[in-house]
Length: 212
Image (tube, rainbow, N blue to C red; front, side, top):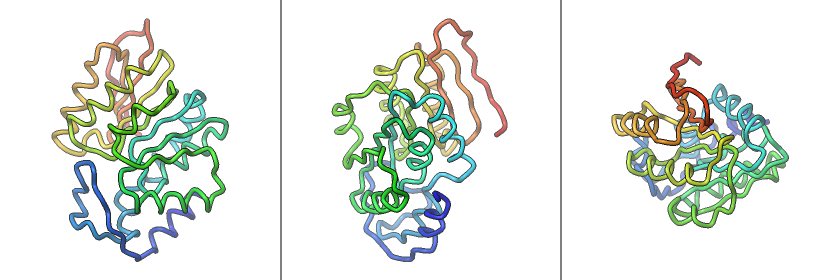
């Protein structure tokens, strides 16, 4: 069902006005964008969506926080992966939030709490100690590190944080390297597109790189 939604969006040639609160898209420079282009360049590929689904099933029981909803494909994967939890997903652009809401309704997914606004404004209102966090939507070094630190503060031994596009740019490379050295991090897994962070106390500190 999720891939049917993706295909529908990929064939949608309507244009919407996009309000970027983050670094903006490296591929789409104009703020007037086609829905099909947003879906093609911003939605997580199925391969990684399935990974997020499996991780949500394993770690997301206490709640899931997502930075950057876009059209909601990654959100749907995580919500479907753990129907018994709530996915709190944040998106800065109201027009894109409307698209995501339509996609959530089309799949009958009800365990999603869609929040609109800047991440920094929304974070203080999140009353959840997450089992899983997915950070996307803003590819500036300082922003990514700030969001990670705020999530690390409310995470525990069982929380996993996934960061998208860790090799997207020099800034993201620098952010990933700084995150790996955070004092509370026990080990990380680099699967090239995404970085996965664990806080497991008592485990040897190590940074794994694997092919996925």
